[in-house]
Amino acid sequence: MPQAVSEYAKSKDFKRVDIIKKQILNTYRSDITRFAKGYKEKVEAIFDDIPSELSKKNKSSR
Image (cartoon, rainbow, N blue to C red):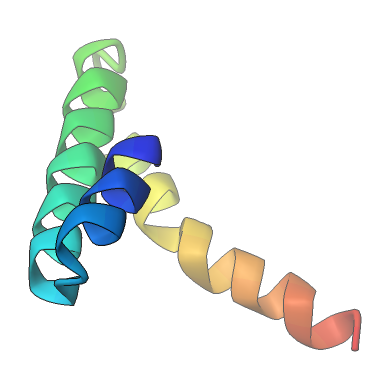
């Protein structure tokens, strides 16, 4: 997320960085669901589960 990193380097404002990250995630969600004809809900659920799945992997590797 170079845009978010760049914003933090300029402003040191986490709220602005969070807004940019949310915009990026919304763009990803929009792109993903656009190509998921007939599977929109399932694809959204998988997308939403990514952070928790990554967290599980990090916990088990410690």
